[in-house]
View 1 (cartoon, rainbow, N blue to C red):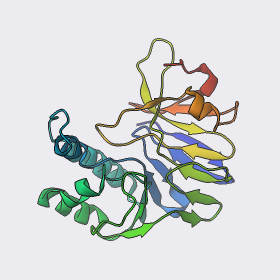
View 2: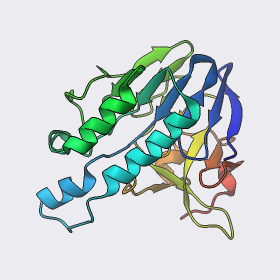
View 3: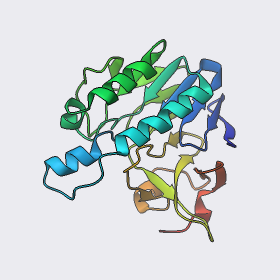
Length: 220
């Protein structure tokens, strides 16, 4: 796996090909928008029945990222569950997996718009977190040095399929969604264009992290 290593607000970070962000100096692994329990939430609200395996797949991928980096701290950057009902409905196996992944490290749940309240799954629950020059929160604001999620950006270049991507400029990072059933917003959408600087880059995830100028991404 090839990661994109870069400096952001005088801090060396790596946008990993798997969609996680790694701060090696602090041994912090950041992941956004897990949306655990999405299939359960859709079924509960009378929607299309989807195979209930996305939580297992998402946690397998998260476990692989944790095994690869051995973080001291994991930050889940909001919308970790598709709603509070999904958090309450998790299986014993899911609860056991989360307990095992949390063991021996700090685990921080940042509040999202889908899961605004605390969940009884261990770890620390916060609206946002400031660590050194960086601020971790769910939805981007105008603050310099912030790392956020929420928008599920996806980007594509000519001849390639659309992939979840990081958006990075001098002031902010917007993380890709990590959850297996999450959709996405075009990296060139007007909503994101209003947030990101014209010189921003997109880092496409996949087998390797591919940094490209955001303006070179297709508008789809």
